[in-house]
Length: 307
Image: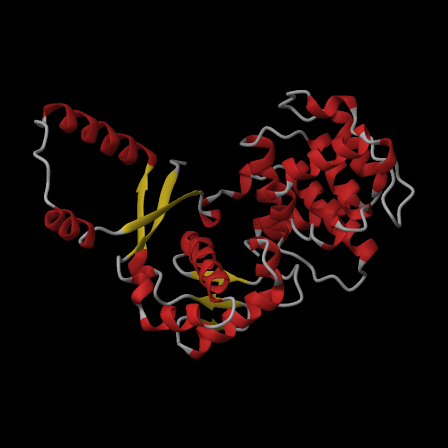
């Protein structure tokens, strides 16, 4: 599948928009505006739609985890956006940012490379431009758009066969660990989680052992078990989690977390550049959860049925 690039096209008068000006005038307005931009970028891959996956208490709680923002700030912003008709609630678990469709720019990777190549060739052929007046500069800048680029792969275009059994096992393992901390945790979108783990092994070159270790460690940690509530959170915080574990290992005084008797020791194999997951990691998952095979088979059946 060809990689696609998306970007958010902001008109040069975006910050002069009445709704944005009102938002920026309230206490903490600049923070709300930044979260608004983050939400728009997050919705690009689904053409303005944001979906509630169920790992948070509600949409505001879920977005606060994904965006690393305070839930109270996200909740206030969503209330404001609904009041100004900038976001619509559809079917309870789906939100639509109605200004996004006209602000999306996209192209394939090959088209992007060709565009960059042509721009370089044209710049070689052009003579040195004369120095512009301030007036000309102002006119040129007023006609431009601010483009915020974001590289993403559309989840809905990912064939089911690319999600391997080990990815479903990791998704199920994370969910079971979360259940140990909160028996009432909502059932997630296992296909979405499994695909995130696929990206971690195939694109990020993380091994199954590394991912399994961070799942176990984060769900036993007094701080991180409240923040690692999805596969995307594991992927986003991967490097930060590794650094924290290393810090605990190098500092004997911090070898123990409050509320846990687990010693923070990062395995020797963690820093190795293994691409293929060792068999022992898969077997370890099965030992932790004897019913794992049956649960994975059930999930695979649902995926084949398109559920």
